[in-house]
Length: 454
Ligand code: NAD
Image 1 (cartoon, rainbow, N blue to C red):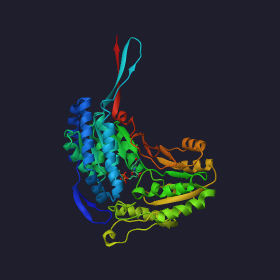
Image 2 (cartoon, helix red, strand yellow):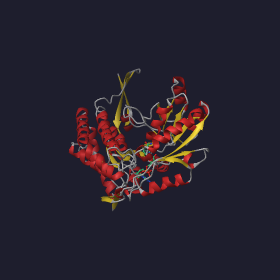
Image 3 (cartoon, rainbow, N blue to C red):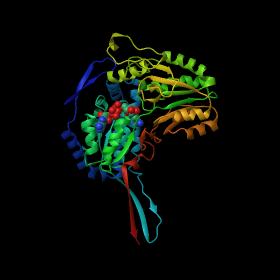
């Protein structure tokens, strides 16, 4: 079985890649299971050294990995270089883990009590198509660092960078079976990670719908699971903010990666007295948003990842009134690609699909509000709670609203969501568990308690 990969900027075929069968998936899981005892027992300093070697080789291949992502996923070259660099940095960050995965000594009567953080065994990482490299690294780097072996399934349509990173791991000296990339279908490879008795944790990033199935499946074996799911994040702009700066930053917060970002600020709430000024300024920024061949150094936005994703976003646009939009490229090279412009809708009704549902494309809905309480209530009126931003120059308000909005990752006067030093994950239907930050490796361990009588 194979999958035909398409360059989303041109619509042309790139190549065929193998799609693993269930038997091939089982073989990869069994190899990971067999490799586990030796990897667990690699001395901490040596495991750290191997992870640093893995990070270095990924760093040496930054441009190659970035170009693969431009071709396979339509990411802009600037973003793709950052994404490959993020894999290198996350590996480097967690290479410090093996030498620091300390337990506790707890005072008790009659003896000594100590805890150990022991790896789980084989971890299955299931990755979506929107950020193939970073999301893979957020799973496999801390899992490997904590002494687990990993099988990783990239999304069916964007496997190229993961396959290459798997080869680089071997070149770096990571032993065979410790980190294996298994490209293929979710219903075959991903599902087998859930049902196979030798996979002890599933790390899933993707849609809320599939995430619920993964969680139900993992319940059968009481298997560890982390879910990073959808989002409909609010960007709340108060009239006391630097409105010009907020309007200039708003397009990047939703149109980056063509809006195919779980953290996209796809709802913008603007205080009524600043609404017209904000929208006027944002229109000027959107019209200038550079949607071009993603390989161009100056490109700010490439195409949708697939024809299906483009059509799905277009249906939302057709069901709303687009107030203003940017341009799409019109040269012969991009004629067959899956292009959409950056689009802005004024929303008057919280029941509209474009306001409630995760569009996952370059379409943002804007709505006015009157006061702080209403802003928080509107932001929280969502099944999701992944990310969000608050623009204000009032420190007390920044803190009150930060505590009031039910979401995992907030930024004040900026749109930063994911920094590998800090925890990342969602409230409500945006997920379960946290990735990244200093504690991520612990989520790939069991804590064992040992009491030794005097
Ligand atoms: P998806 O749920 O369709 O697929 C995600 C992955 O799961 C793919 O690798 C797919 O092959 C696999 N899969 C599908 N069905 C499966 C099954 N039955 N069993 C096991 N695996 C299965 O999602 P997508 O369309 O690839 O990605 C877009 C979604 O991902 C969006 O909803 C987005 O918000 C979400 N996302 C969330 C985060 C986050 O960190 N919270 C990050 C990126 C993307």
